Structure formats: C-alpha cells, structure tokens
Image 1 (cartoon, rainbow, N blue to C red):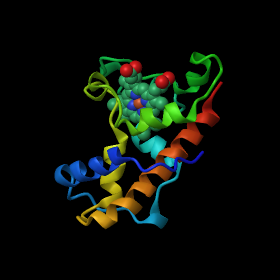
Image 2: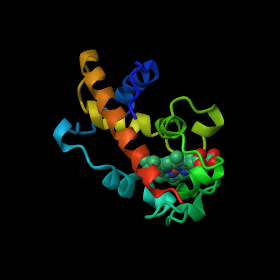
Image 3: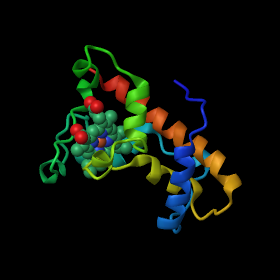
Image 4: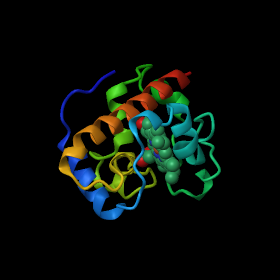
Length: 146
Ligand code: HEC
C-alpha cells in the first residue's frame, strides 16, 4: 500500500516533535529498522511479542491493548490497511484516544526521522521515512491476521 497525499498533520507533528524531542538522534534512510524490529521495540511491550494483546505492560493500562491478530476478524474479515495506518500514525485520533494508552507513533517516528534537523526542507523526506515505516508495520500486522 502507498499513501501519496501530503499530510499536513505530519508536518505539524514534525514541528511539535522538534520542540519536544529535539535531542533525538536522526535515523538515516539506510538504517531504518525493519517492521519486525519496530514491532518488537515499540509495540510488543503492550501488544505482546506475537501481537495478541498480552505484553508485559498490558496489565498496567486502563484500556487493554488490542489483540492485533484479530483486527480483520473484528471487522467482518476485512483488514483495512488505511484504517490501521491512521491508528498507528495516531495524528487524527480523537482527543480521548490521544490521551489514552495507545502512543502516537507518528510523532515519535517523526522525531527519529528529523533528529536534530530544524530545516523545513528536512521535513518532507522525514515524512516519507515515517510513512514508509508505518506502512511496513501495517503490512507486518496484516501477516499476523488469523
Ligand atoms: C503503551 C501501550 C501500547 C503500545 C506501546 C502500543 N500500543 Fe497499540 N494499542 C494500545 C491500546 C491500549 C490500544 C487500544 C486502544 C483503544 O481501544 O482505545 C491499542 C490499539 C492499537 C490498534 C488498533 C487495533 C484495532 O483493532 O483497531 C493498533 C492497530 C495498534 N494498537 C498498533 C500498535 C503498533 C503498530 C504499535 C507499535 C508501533 C503499538 N500499537 C504500540 C496500547 C499500545
């Protein structure tokens, strides 16, 4: 899947991230982690190593982390890459969702993509990297569906 539209949200995210996380080291294009690595690093603590919603942090959350092997099953057998993408990006979630237990990965990955750069011209390639990374995670989640 490939999203081609320019997301102003992510650009705002870049700016916010620069303010809040300016000291993150940037990850170069060729050093991007694989989706499996990203999942184990950033998702498994809540969703579990196999995505079943049973990670070590799950018990401490107010909202139980979703069983990610059953996204399609919960949706009449349909895995909507677009819906899942925006859930992970998180930038268009309702306020309650953002304030909830599911982190907003768009901001975080954007922080890693821009690193200490402060030029707006860095933001567009950074946004591409964030999108590639989230898309890879979505494709990975699709392989987990039961
Ligand atoms: C701090 C805990 C936590 C981490 C870390 C986390 N999540 Fe979540 N996630 C949640 C919670 C809690 C929900 C349920 C939110 C709700 O129902 O309101 C959720 C829901 C989701 C959903 C929606 C599932 C559905 O059926 O609609 C997806 C997709 C998802 N997470 C993917 C990820 C990915 C990918 C990562 C890693 C990049 C990740 N999550 C990291 C806590 C977490």
